[in-house]
Amino acid sequence: MGDFYFENKTGTFLVSHRKALSHHMPSSHFHSTYECYYLMSGKREFFIQDRTVSIEEGDIVIIAPNILHRTTNAEQPKHERLIINIHETLFSPDGSHKEALRPLFEQDYLIIRASLRDRLPIESLAQAVLREMQDKRSGYELFARTLALQLLIACSRHFRQNAVVVPASPSPMHDRISEIVRYINDHYMEELSLHLLADRFYISPYYLSRFFKEATGFSFVEYVNSVRIKEAKKLLEHTSMKVNQIAGKVGFGSVTHFGRVFKEVTGFAPLYYRR
Image 1 (tube, rainbow, N blue to C red):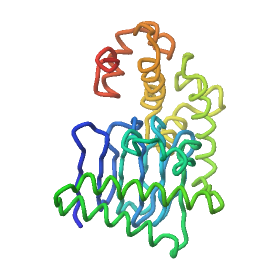
Image 2 (tube, one colour):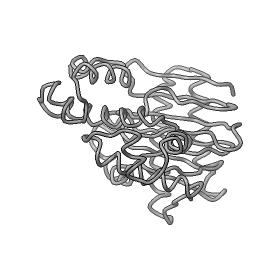
Image 3 (spheres, helix red, strand yellow):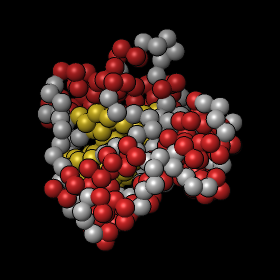
């Protein structure tokens, strides 16, 4: 099966499959959909919220909306993966998904690592999604969406029945960067610069800059901006605060700079996004 990418008109359902030598995620690292990342072969490192984990063939990572994440290259870049993004509005009209998918609503992300036997039903659902998307027979998008939902339910069941997997962090350096990332996540509204944090954590700015990128896949500035914009998005969606107030509240010195970065990260101007 070759590489392909599908996105519906409303952006509420996306399917992307690729066999790749290396991989750079599209520019959006947080979105309003649930993301299901299935690693079909190879090894990857996954930065998610505040830590980097090593995932291996057969692992599934499910990420709640608006959680920052990115895959970074593992030692062996060759891999195959399937990514499905699906919006909660497509889950069920009567709200019955709330119970069926409870682990997804209670956690920021789930990592499913199943035995070969338990992987079979999950694998066959993933393959069925792939077949539907490639054959494009009548009703294929709807059919694939129902399969994606079954896949999420199967993963939720597995999560409930089995011990929770916490994959190891790849190295002590990654743990150190996690500590710094947690600091940024908690203090994004304050002034944050590479030098400030290098001083605070007793490491050289050069070391911090280099290993931050290696561990998270983000440059330092790109990460700080992403966290700030993610918070700004929430305020635009859920409050009537003015754009200049939001800019100050999430740590931007000027509203012009905020507007420019917001458009870079989300593709929209803040006011357009609010509409």
